[in-house]
Image (cartoon, rainbow, N blue to C red; front, side, top):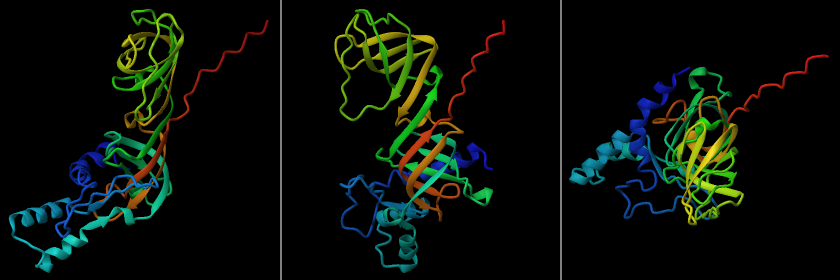
Length: 287
């Protein structure tokens, strides 16, 4: 099997130049560029054009902009036309696998995964791409420990703080979440137990500092219990890791220019972390 670094790193450079053009692909034959929204009214994602060879497309764009080609030389125009793939014409498929590595975030992130149905090990690793507009439906679920908490994550906890925002009781559970667009958290009231939703500013094994975007108390410092449990249900690709299981619905391309054995232009991705093992309770000694 390919190593993680050898799978993604050499390919991302050429891929990123293509990904940036998926929403409004350059078409020298069109009077106007593709202005379709990334999500149709029925929820279907619009991907636009994938160029099998980014180098060929860039070379042709350069000739076009210089005025050296105006679509009359078939030796040039036919390869250019054949280099284009309308992603939206590919049928959607459902795939399952095990995550090998992830790169990037919700906008154009990449997920390398092993497809267990592949009969040839050299064709087992595929790469799913999230939509560059950030509209792929991504969910990462599972349990973790406090080491996954980092700046920028949105979390939810039950707690009680004083008027300065200092927590009065250790927090035993933290939920990492992705709030819906336009969400405004409830303000934090001093000496009142309740749900606190905020953005992580700083985290350690014993303390969590949150920014609160509502009310008078705009920062809280929560002490964490030694056995604090962290639950994940969020659209945060950075929380995925090797060994997680993944379910993907998307449009698969296994031809020229694909990453790994195939590129999956993903509309729906669910990543589930392995169930965490807990130490068994020791049996009482017989009297």
